[in-house]
Amino acid sequence: MHAVIMAGGRGTRFWPRSREKKPKHLLDIVSSRTIIQETVDRIKPLIDPKNILVVTGRKHAKELIRQLPEVPARNVIIEPVGRNTAACIGLAALHIQKKAKDDVMVVLPSDHAIGNPEKYRAVISAAARAAERENALVTIGIQPDGPHTGFGYLEGGSSAGKITGQKILEVKSIREKPDIRKAKEFVKKGNFFWNSGMFVWKTSVILSEIKSYLPDLHAGLMTIKEALGKPTEAKTVEKIYRKLVSISIDYGVMEKAKHVFVLPAEFGWSDVGSWDALWDISAKDANGNASSGGGAIILEDTEDSLVCGTNKLVALVGMKDVIVVDTKDAILICKRGRSQNVKKIVDRLEAKKMKKYL
Image (cartoon, rainbow, N blue to C red):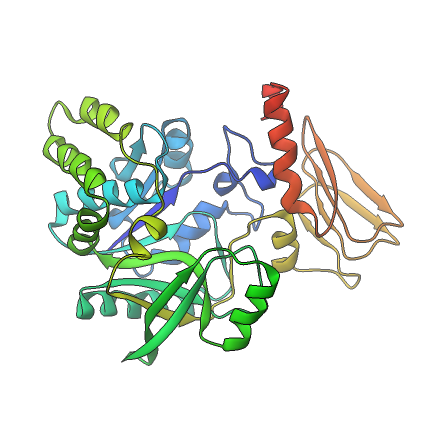
């Protein structure tokens, strides 16, 4: 079994901590370990680090190799340009097949948090068995604890039995992020699960499905496959990968495929998608305040707030429901509940060409 960690993206909702040179997954915002280090720490009791692959962009490869000494440097696969998850997964599948012919691949985002790693590994292990047994696409669905509009949903259908006590359902439909009315409807029905973005399948199965539903992408991948391990590899990947269609695996394959299964799970999952999400999962004091970053912080008559300080003393007096993030060159002050809009600050910085803050 191999793991593939997708380490692209910038994590713009974590500005000003996340920047182009150091995106969210390379930051230590959840614990003293960076998020991608925690991702590897969680999976390596199940999958040997020599079988863990990380797909990333060229500008982040050196830092990833530094942060993950247990993962062989040759396992860090560089995308010449971001082409969304279908191309990323297809490229990783080729590298796995080159060394192991056909094997189960566990596809993981690089930037999630898991509260119960042991239970998480049990679910992943059951999903791997299901992928082998069914020769199908398997995904992990998170039992929703409320009508969240920030996630896609998986509609569970008929039962496909159990593996090691883990329930398996056929996927009836895959839904995009809903509005609040539709999200409440999904949760009320009881057979809808958050789409975690975690997938398990055999390399042969996913490449076959890509061939069926994204034939042009598959043709490009096959050209790359022929060049792997040859002197022409780097040049071929650089040329062909840029021409590949940019499409998600959900939209390009999962929504169309005939044999898709979901394992409903509860293991304290969070996509850590914003400063608000970080406050949700963080330990809090008696007044509901959380802190991150290790800087000096003094709170007086302050409630239900998040403070991330790194360089200087940060003091709050008489505040409630605020997020304060201090960095060397920028300070963010945001009302808690509005941190999804931090991305708009990044958009404005880009529009004003204020590159030193990006």
